[in-house]
Length: 408
Length: 129
Image 1 (spheres, rainbow over the protein chains, first blue to last red):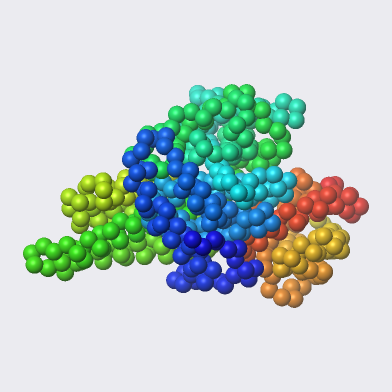
Image 2 (image 1 turned 180 degrees about the vertical axis):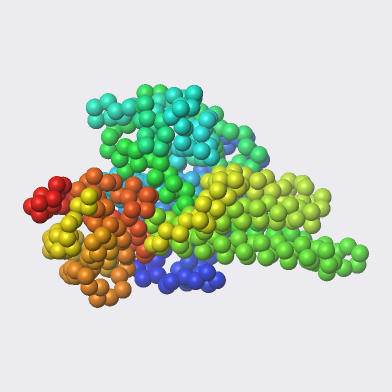
């Protein structure tokens, strides 16, 4: 298997319909990894107990560079942007969305450190991802009472139940619990969002890099999920966890803005995961329609089936165009755009559900049994609609952008 | 009240800051290594600083820059004085960047000497840092 290479300094500018030669090479390498390494294990990993984790897949992904895609070259990474990440994640998700999210969540844990622009923080944490052994990160935001809306209003009765931090000398002390943290069970560190004690709401939200082997950290139960079973969504409990002050990302109170920036950057990549799910399901259905004969002709020659296949192909293509546009813009604008990533995710998430449903119907009973992987695609498609912005949250972001006429 | 009363004040202070940085062999070397050219477009008052390896131009952009950074002079003052955090400035849209984000990630740490030098320069220019 080919090792991913650092692109030349002057990468060829991509267009929306033609990836640069560098990104085409990246796509081919990741596709080879996905087909050769992930596909043979995807079904077994999906059907394994909820807390099963396949380190061999992660190790193989690390060997081709998947854990250091966005790490700057100065720290041994490939220095790629959102476009490279999205292209890679589509390829992985076409075989297993849960595996794509293992790598995606690790990058989400790297993002605050990258966004901080803090050379000390970067020098301490980013080289971890370029070593011989795979190291995972995670991003700890969600709590029992905070999902789509991360901000607990100061007046809320439960405002005191959030994960909190208080300063004690040159350390901060964290208390509270996080929920559904992808990679939380297996990550080295978590970029953890906590409110300064007595400061609920946006102004007190602060991001910390927390070593998950620190005293007081307990990696809790793994959620037994419907889909995305290759990655582990875990509770994280913090009891008087001491975090050195140099692990604060961007300063006290910067957490909310860091999170918004992260989310706007991540949505293109999540749309790419939806595109991969849709493509994987479409490819299976396409092959099936070519070989299955009913009424004396192949399924693809029946008009109703042909119509379905054509609609599915169009949805996969449109999803890809939208995420490429969003990722390209996210790579070239700060703050990351709000509108294009939200549109891409809204469309691609819905397309993935529609395409996998149509693909199942085209495959009939075979689509409904596990061995053909089709029902896994549908379960995974439903999961993507939830994280990094539900359709309702995305709609709010899109509509707000429609009325935002601020010039650059 | 704006920090800078005249354009000349902003020209001089930001020009001096980046001339000092550009004269630093480490900074210049890193710009060269990353093939970075940057236009810092300040508004209110309008001052553009163009940085290239070994070059600083005020209100002149001799070639299309790899990165364009746009912010008001007040934002720049707060940023370099350490009163405004970079991630906050970006996330709130007070500081906007156009260009490859991979280059931004390489460029941001190079700016750290500016945070060390600016407060003294600002005080010398009669501005509270």
